[in-house]
Image 1 (tube, rainbow, N blue to C red):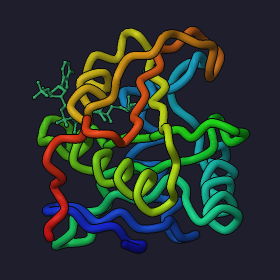
Image 2: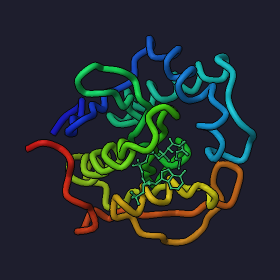
Image 3: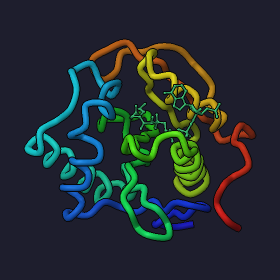
Length: 181
Ligand SMILES: CC(C)(COP(=O)(O)OP(=O)(O)OC[C@H]1O[C@@H](n2cnc3c(N)ncnc32)[C@H](O)[C@@H]1OP(=O)(O)O)[C@@H](O)C(=O)NCCC(=O)NCCS
């Protein structure tokens, strides 16, 4: 298994410099998408998105994994991001991430992408535990974690606030993988 990761409907590929505009307009510049991401209010400016993309690119170069661009497999349309990274970019824990543009919510894309990222993290990168950090108000995100077989393991301070932690150990909790065999 190698990058890009393909599922039935999605392709998870490393970000490139040219993704700045679409990353900003689809995700980081959208208050409704950023509502629960951390304790600071709402969306970023494009000038704030730029260093964030650079941090993603640097993480991929340094570690071989990162937040990946989640795209429609057939058309290449950018839908959002999903991947795994060092917790808050520091580690040592490993964190699962998923954000979709609002136009793409409610179609099961997040769970499909997250399952594939978890599988890659456990099977390819050999991480024993991968954790999702979720704002307690983010019901949709909690459902995504649960659908991926992740288990609530407690609360902890992350991204400037008290967050729920859901863990995947890759042992039997995952639903039927959506990746084509
Ligand atoms: C959270 C998010 C990724 C969910 O993506 P999605 O593709 O719409 O999720 P799915 O379609 O896979 O749905 C997963 C479950 O959540 C439920 N759900 C979706 N939106 C919901 C909402 N607003 N309220 C309650 N449940 C919701 C779905 O019904 C589904 O439940 P089911 O398993 O019982 O069928 C998406 O809403 C998003 O990108 N939000 C902004 C960024 C964000 O908060 N990311 C998470 C950071 S921890």
